[in-house]
Length: 45
Ligand SMILES: [Zn+2]
Image 1 (cartoon, rainbow, N blue to C red):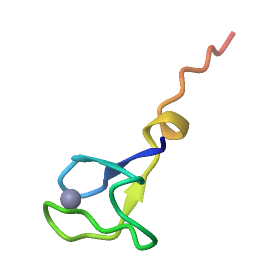
Image 2: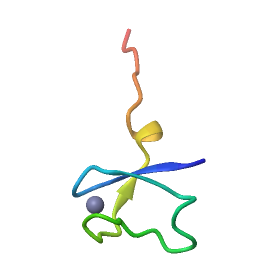
Image 3: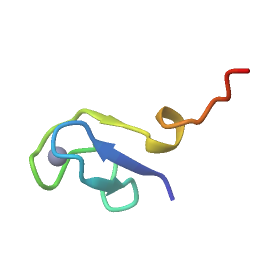
């Protein structure tokens, strides 16, 4: 299951609940980002 995070309200939206078009159920925005890929700890040594 892929979980997206709304860019505006910060709510987590699962891709399973929305078929096809991904729209935030809370604020209705269509801008999302993947928390997994965006938040990545990188060690800078
Ligand atoms: Zn939202």
